[in-house]
Image 1 (cartoon, protein in one colour):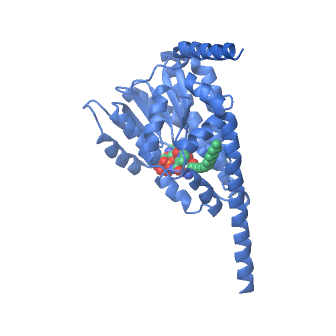
Image 2 (cartoon, protein in one colour; image 1 turned 60 degrees about the horizontal axis):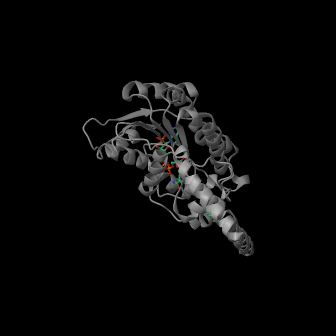
Length: 332
Ligand SMILES: NC(=O)C1=CN([C@@H]2O[C@H](COP(=O)(O)OP(=O)(O)OC[C@H]3O[C@@H](n4cnc5c(N)ncnc54)[C@H](OP(=O)(O)O)[C@@H]3O)[C@@H](O)[C@H]2O)C=CC1
Ligand SMILES: CCCCCCCCCCCCCCCC(=O)[C@@H](N)CO
């Protein structure tokens, strides 16, 4: 009986691998492709632009500050692999209103051709205790991190569907997979990208357009430096669990997964476990990934419970320390 079951499982897995070409998308060739990177003037976005430029892409950098854009253009251009490549810079606030973003994408397509890959990387983070967060920050982060990804995507989707090809990348965060102390404004804006990505992927898969959601951990960028100035100690201590990555390391992983059409893009062992654990009803782009999720779910949930226990003890310890220092201040 056991032999029969084992034979059945082997046959099933072999069948899966036989049909896997039907599931795995054909990799996108970046050489000569037009890649738009919102948030491409700094940090992860700039590193993604460099990585695509190294592979022969034409780049449009989108951000607000024109001086930063020009500086980034100079840095990206150093990595040209042929004399045809171009870096275009266009300044716009991606969260402003759809018509401005639509006109920017139209300009970019008139100059460099239809967009083959859109990287929604523009974003910002603010961390503070819920009751200490300025109320307008909740709306602001939703506008920049969520709507600031909806608008560029809306502006490219029609052409991608006409061409029956394209890649759309959303840069989320590990804080878009787990809600953390201090991120009551940031995490929801990143979790929202997951719902958008899953819904959109179901709509556009028949058009050979693939969506990728990237979940980086803390990454050593000007954005992280700015965020760390006001980050609560609890958020710092919990985020340190996944360590701090370099933007070019994160960018390499993100570009590889986007080119391959992988729905999920994670960094490091914690990121791998977190993504397998939180895969939910997300699409599978490889048999191996699907099998790994099936096999590891129970184990990773067990490990996650220990992580959650350690996060709770960090929060309790910080609260006790705060109360003790308040009491000491009162005694003085
Ligand atoms: N650094 C980290 O630890 C992590 C970051 N992330 C995410 O990665 C993305 C990039 O972060 P990071 O590289 O650290 O950030 P940086 O602050 O270094 O870069 C942010 C980029 O986005 C642009 N930008 C910000 N707001 C807008 C806007 N309203 N309209 C257009 N462009 C905008 C900035 O240019 P300008 O200000 O001129 O507009 C800049 O080019 C963000 O979405 C962030 O949430 C995810 C996980 C970890
Ligand atoms: C099996 C279960 C494994 C669980 C591992 C959990 C690890 C949690 C670490 C969370 C790190 C959050 C980083 C946010 C980065 C970010 O987006 C901001 N820096 C924005 O600038």
